[in-house]
Length: 75
Image (cartoon, rainbow, N blue to C red; front, side, top):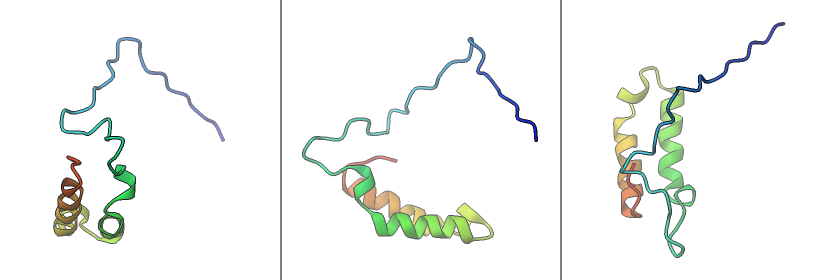
């Protein structure tokens, strides 16, 4: 078994985070990993086990986004 390594050329630019992503949650607020766990699990299960992926899971994706927005996170 052979392995190959790839290097990033020095001219490659790193992408910056999009403007709508919360980078620093407030000290008093919840962390994104700790909220909307049921919605996230439902979305992930749908995405992993459905035949058409995102198309079949739009309602679950929307529910997850709405839940996160309720906590102040924009995704």
